[in-house]
Image 1 (cartoon, rainbow, N blue to C red):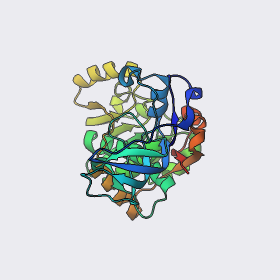
Image 2 (cartoon, rainbow, N blue to C red):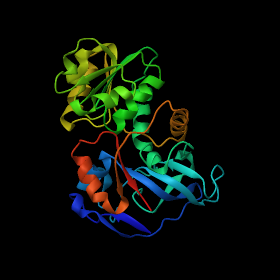
Image 3 (cartoon, helix red, strand yellow):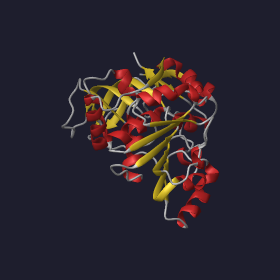
Image 4 (tube, rainbow, N blue to C red):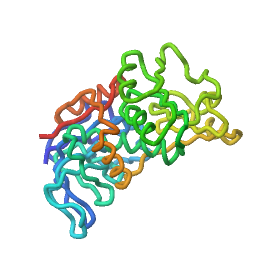
Length: 315
């Protein structure tokens, strides 16, 4: 199969497009003929070597966490899916593998693609939407009527977070983004929109029950005065220097700080699928690139200027 791969850590130039072995499914896995994938910040952080203490020296490595396509083969114990089914999900070994013509998904973490979605739209869903749902629900403990702020509301995770917060019953959602994306986040259902170039939300006082920082540009320490009593601050991509100071600050406060990474969970993806099918939430795509141009897509993602998802199409 053709795939994007790299044999050393470094800039986007280390990415290659060429032949790699086609994986074979284990008994509980499905082999997916990939039709679309996407770029997430984790992809270029792994590629650059920023996370090599976790990812190690094993090469060649195929990047990519989002798989959307058709079932090409099933393991001997698989019962939910058959060849030809349209499916999507996250590989559950945490190593990537999605930026290729074929990829593996465990049956337990895969879900059916809603009939209303194209493969390109589906390719932008799994990691970003799961991050938004789990951050708001599992860690943010969002309650009906809560006042929620989403920082980085125009990004891949942020666009889902604004919509999912409303779907979970938030009373008011405030979206923070740059001046070029104010109307976009308004169209996603934000009740209040802040241009971060004109207003610093951390200067607000006791306004929010939950702050979800989708871009890691703030911190609990900086944001805690904007939280109500027993408020929650949640992020998945903090500045490294903020991790320890946030933990110390939260230990001395009635408010809480949560750092997490999204889990590959098929039941959560099924809920997201139901919302997508019903039109409760939608996928926002900024740009699409063919698989062979993944290096260019990485460079674009690294600028931090994408509004919504960057999708890779696989012929």
